[in-house]
Length: 246
View 1: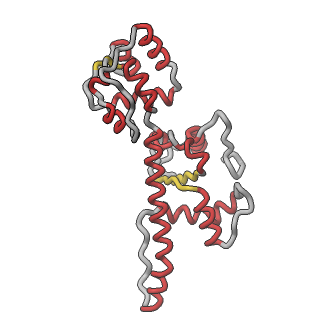
View 2: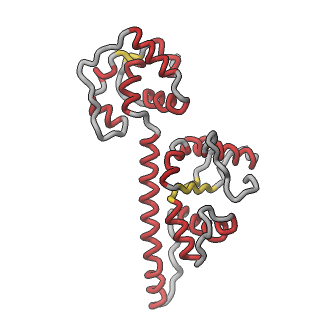
């Protein structure tokens, strides 16, 4: 996309910047609706995927998958007999050997093999079994990654305990600790005493100031969490604008 085999990510860029750049360079009115995107990750890069799903939806991309890099690299090497010679393989190796593997994984319903007589059909079935097992493993891995990404898009328990009292009056009278843990996607119950004391005026002002200065991504996660709360809470008047209520 930039005349290089790999798109360089700088300290100030993100995957969302890459998707925006791709959309602009292709200059399509319908965003990325016609694209098939394959997002490959290694363990150190998993956190960079946390905000990709909303961006894909915004750009209209529905044909995408998230997979771990190492198993796909190794499988492409096995099938082609040509292992990559560098940590970041060149463009021709990706095109000739990795893309066919990615395309086979994108199709959710495998095509049945053509009917063959007796022994040949049995041999085909034996050959297909390992591929089916590998597909199931990749599907399970994709599901696990999506679950991790959903959890990563929720506010931390520390933020909820600190900022919910700044947004609502007596929120923990209505939200029990076990309910808060479930809503936040956490297994450990928070330590919240009952009744939870209302913050003083000075503390409340400080918390609300900190809240308004949160990074945009953290602020939006917290705002979306509040919008989805099923409880009838008493919203503080000064926080209506922050929450987007008239």
